[in-house]
Image 1 (cartoon, rainbow, N blue to C red):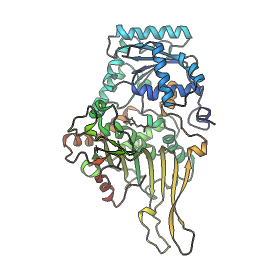
Image 2 (image 1 turned 135 degrees about the horizontal axis):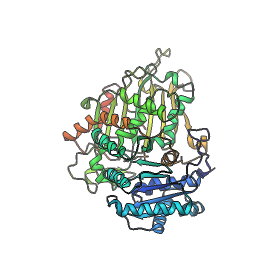
Image 3 (image 1 turned 120 degrees about the vertical axis):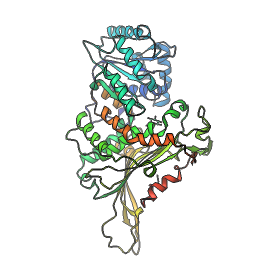
Length: 507
Ligand code: BG6
């Protein structure tokens, strides 16, 4: 069975049925995100017959292309990102169209061209007036695009629906996020607004919920009585590539912690929702966020910035030597946090979060560290490394590993930690899991907001991280760069756990 034949969600979270016929307009269609994620994700859906019929995609970007040039570029992009199937592509490509336009053009200019193109495609292919706008542009353009869509008469329809998908980061702090929302809500309603965090579209992240709530064995021990602490790691081996302009302004907390890491924490910590739907899941994640204790930045947070080092035997520059980064940059590329959740389930259980660029390798993992046994009858010392750990390997080598102690065969009593290993690849016979964006776009086309962040979640996420951002911006880090590219981060991050008599799990 190859990846395209894998029947998605066969016993899963949605029906996998094609959604309403519609047009998707991708703003920033010539950009990195569109090339690397969005168009390949839509191609994947097409390969699995999960796109609605009729259907069309209109790219809108500054690059001076026509439909043909857009298709040619996207063909190259898809063949770089996916196992390419020429026949599938030939069927998919005619759905792709393009409008050259400036995001900040007057509504009666490029946006009118977009409107005309949509109308003519709808007429030609008999597509009802349902349009999903996906803003894959730098965040500075979000408001302007929404206003121009409104002014050009594109934001409403008497016969169909309009939906807006917005990429992260949603604002740069709580105030700007509220401001952005206010402006969006003048045009689109909350139930038309899809704030996307692609981590929630990952199979393995959704599986956290399934493992917890579809198996009776985990939930009874999923609390402070049995769990000592939780470690959430999103380690990346890549640097910032060509994204210095974005990253210098954003930094690791806005780029990764405010969204992806807090979402992983929520998926690990939530109470069972009554129903798996938008209201149920989002109400419960909001409660987790409310229970997070304000961070004491000096005690609970460690920052880092990578210096030069070696990755795969090749020398790589430090952050400050990356193109378009200022030589004295104070931007953090690594963060480790101790987060406490003040509720009945989690009182006293620290959640340690860490993420960084240019770490030893790419690993995303949620590891549940259980408490030691209350009484060990064997005549040996029980150290923290002998504890049970349940590790959800979210990527790569996706799976779940349970570590426990077993008797080493032989005379005498020698206890050894061993691992039971569930791997997606062998259990489901697929090497590459479906793309996170595929599911999220599919859900957005189907009007399902379950896996999209609600406004209150976003505001609270900013409240949680703002003290860290404020402190790290106002106080220059005297020791930057403080970790070598290719290492596991700054020494101070080890100190964060050592202070609690714990250590980071090796990955
Ligand atoms: C993005 C961040 O949201 O997530 C990137 O902007 C990061 O900096 C990426 O590299 C990580 O996503 P994934 O799916 O590769 O873990």
